[in-house]
Image 1 (cartoon, rainbow, N blue to C red):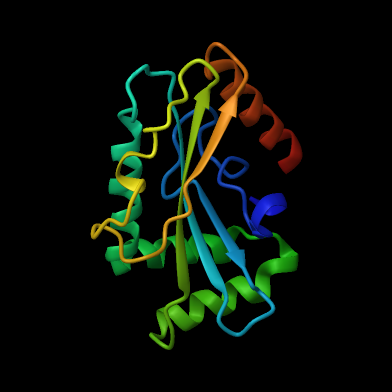
Image 2: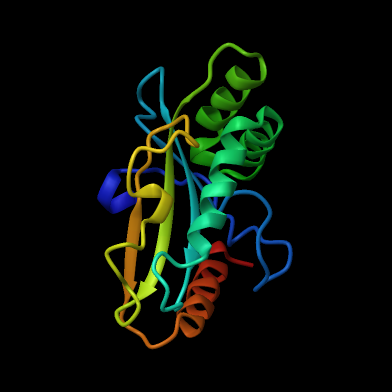
Length: 173
């Protein structure tokens, strides 16, 4: 996301996982764009992978449910912003504290872009994979930026293990 969209990811969910190789709580990625502007953009991303032959794969419905819930439930979005404030890298501490405080004090709701990220293999990727995200959908109050990542592998398991291992390595001891 950083290279393609210029998104800053101030804190890594994978690096701060409570139990390695298990699902994380909350959304998978929280990013920021336009951080130099007073009204920055909050990127809320959910990442799912599937080798399922069906298109769209079943995980797409789960992503849709999760992204709709986090943006319609003030408590959930509040928890995400507090997590971001508490776990961000030092260089982003001020901007993350500001966006969290402004939201908590009801001074502003950040502009939000929902970003479902679907990982598929070269053998399972299909044009209908977007599912609910293929067209305007009234389930979402925010713009959608669907990202499809095609992995050149037979299975996504080894790829996922390598991603988690690298994230823990980069996070340090």
